[in-house]
Image (cartoon, rainbow, N blue to C red):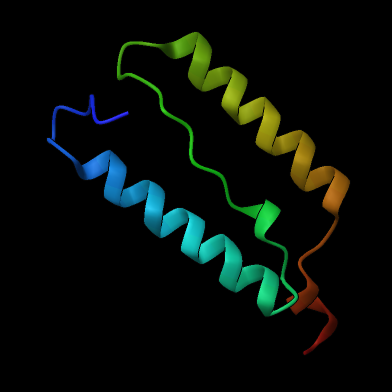
Length: 70
């Protein structure tokens, strides 16, 4: 990667997302509820695809475990 016009911001973001996913798994909330997509500002079809992917994933996962009152 590293092709972000904000220099290396996308690399730092990727590390943070991976760390946060691990934390969510450790807490039992599911790291798969978080994802990072590399999408250019002018790539609307790829954005729409990412939205569909995450919508399908969230539907499959169901409600947040936090909704159980924990």
